[in-house]
Amino acid sequence: MTPLAFAEKYGYTVACAGCGNEREIGGVYCCDLLSMVMGRAKEDDAFLTVMGNVNTIAVAVLADVGCVILCEGIKLDEAVLQKAVDQEVCVLYSDEPTFQVALKLAKELELV
Image (cartoon, rainbow, N blue to C red; front, side):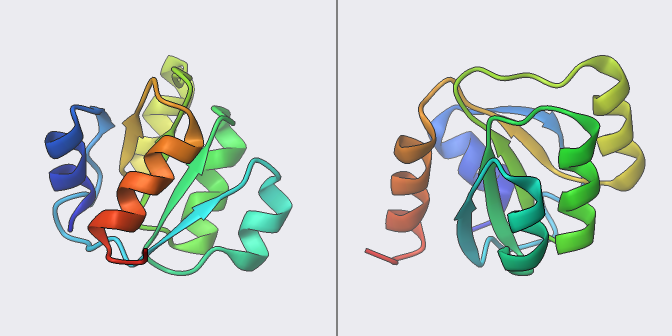
């Protein structure tokens, strides 16, 4: 499932489409400690976090994740959103807790 298909199915907001129609979500990684994400997230993972700063976009690029999903109603400011656009990082917004989003992804990916 692509990030944009996931967003459409569950009613999440697409803040930045990036490569969201070109990549398949391969797994799920939930973490707010960006140094851990750099070393542990896998390519094409959906990266779930509440960290809505420019470093989140940088880490998403470094880890080559499939998308960033900001949970708990967190939004990027305009400068950070522009960085996501520039780097073609798919960013989705959800008002749900991280666990709820991760559970939906896990079911979609048949991880549970």
